Amino acid sequence: KNSFPEDATLWGKRIVIDCANGAGYIVGPTILQELGAEVVVIGDEPNGFNINEGCGAMHPEHLAKVVLDKRADIGIALDGDADRLVMVDEKGEVIDGDKLMGVLAVHLNQEGKLKGGGMVATVMSNQGLDEYLAENGLKLLRSAVGDKHVVEMMMEHGMNFGGEQSGHIIFADYAKTGDGLTSALQALAYLVKSGKKASEAFNPYESYPQQLVNLRVEEKRPFEEIEGLDALKERVEAQGMRHLFRYSGTENKIRLLLEGRDEAALESMMEECVGFFKGALV
Image (tube, rainbow, N blue to C red; front, side):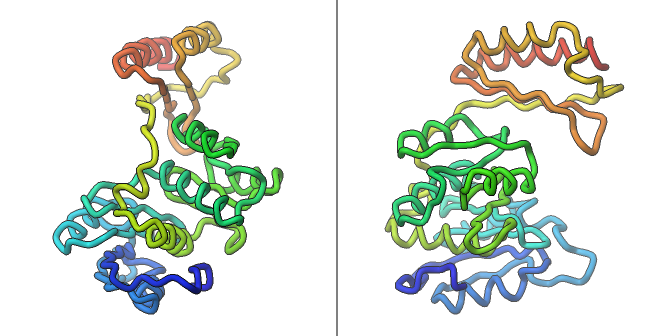
């Protein structure tokens, strides 16, 4: 609660919070109410077995429905251990995680609170985030996937803000790991200050189209041993696309991500990539 500006209030805001039947089911609604919001609470009946079950940050579609039904200004979804944040605007649309982080980074910088001249995200974040930050005089550093890698890079470069598009957002001045409630309060403080509706406040740029395919593989061969992979990457880059090929850490799958301006070209190139990896690994 101390992370929320002393001169701000949530009075007049109707907020739906989905606590995922988890750790934040008491403290989350309590803080919002103490800050003056009209609060609608869901996912606040933990029984030891129903954590994250059809609710919370993993299932924001339920939150979206309640936001629309209650005509709320914004919706907040935590996950079971309350270290992730997913938000829904007044139209019932899930707010893009990259856009949320971008807006918060620029806001922190305008408030004179951003350290290191930028933020850390992961290799999964959209190129649109890079460009939005650059337009505002900020840099984006990319780490490997996983909030621990984000934190390590933040420390290495003297930065105090970073996160993953999936909702792990780190405000190092308040917590050294992702904290859904702290992140929500910072986002709400910005929303109040902006005077805009959530759908406008958290939609500052157009994201690049992306194609993501998860392909089951027989073996996880080291990439340097896969003949023709460098040539494939060159063909992708020649079309002005960004690529990310990585193995899942928990399953026998390879994750293929392509990003670029032309959706039709992306689809065509993804078909080529899928065919290539099927031939090499399946």
